[in-house]
Image 1 (cartoon, rainbow, N blue to C red):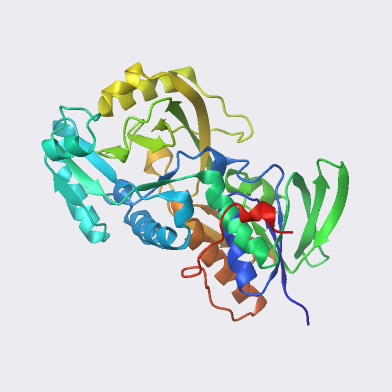
Image 2 (image 1 turned 180 degrees about the horizontal axis):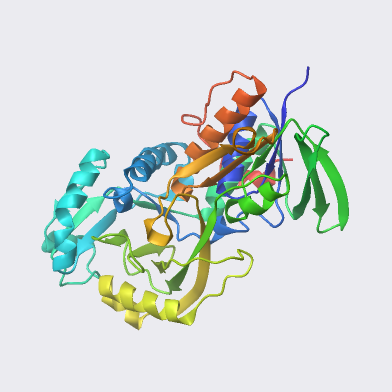
Length: 387
């Protein structure tokens, strides 16, 4: 009997991490992606390695996932992470009123924090707003999105996974019993359509997960929820700067290479393939970003872009949880052979893959433990060096 064959749709963070996990568990893995790596949401993140502080008050499940995965990623893929830390800063009485809930939330979620005086915070980051009232040092970090994805892909590739970019899924193949047995794809570069058969199909397409599931008559309650970000041409801070308050628009400023990125807004759309970068959102990012770091007003805009979060929980916008969910469509829709993973955050990509691979193995009657918590990833450079 040969190896089980898993087909993964999507080469964003979740798709490449799942490929890595399943390859380590002895699967033949085929990944198909209609664009290039990180073609969708994964390529448009601001690159924050979350410590969980942002969610510690009202979404503790997500906060715990973030701090645990933050520490794992620092260990297994340090070459793509800048472990520079972060600050949560209070600028007014409303922010100060949030302080106690933040302290209690971080303690409950085991997020290490240290309160700093305004003078201590300004010594660390001289360009933050000098009118700050208090600050908390947290273990945030930043990462390079494409390099993070390619590190997972390179390691999966070394272990036998195959990646086919610019290869779009046209339909899911179902047998007479309603079981998904493969995909029909089009190689967009060669304009060639063909079939790929497998033992199971993993839908890791983020905000497009509902569209793929619909091909099999299944449903995924995903809400495309975009946000606009703006990059400026000066690296004004060395740490992630967060507003000490409930999550809101423009409340994070991140250093990325020689820039800072301000994010983000939150709104809902029907069509994830067409999301405009709204100018009033861009203007709001300047105003909110400058509250945290006044020098942003003197910087030039380097880029304006958006990313669409694949939110799945009840509620909408900021009220929806940032945790993830894996759907076995046999249980939810009586469709065998299809599993969907969606929701979550870039920081939790490895945990999302572990959960997905656990379900895949359970469905196929395979006993193989997850190994991804400890195994270091190859350099992202190795993806293109491997034959």
